[in-house]
Image (cartoon, rainbow, N blue to C red; front, side, top):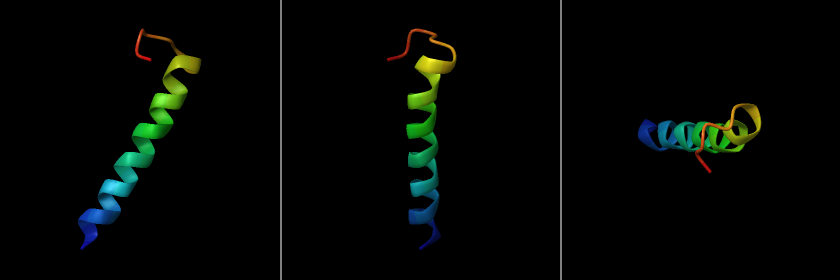
Length: 30
C-alpha cells in the first residue's frame, strides 16, 4: 500500500504550502 505514503507526502506538501503561501507571497488564499 504505497498510496498511503503518497497521500501522506501530498498532505505534508499541502500543509507546508498552505503555511508558506500567506507568508511568502500572499496571493489571497488563506
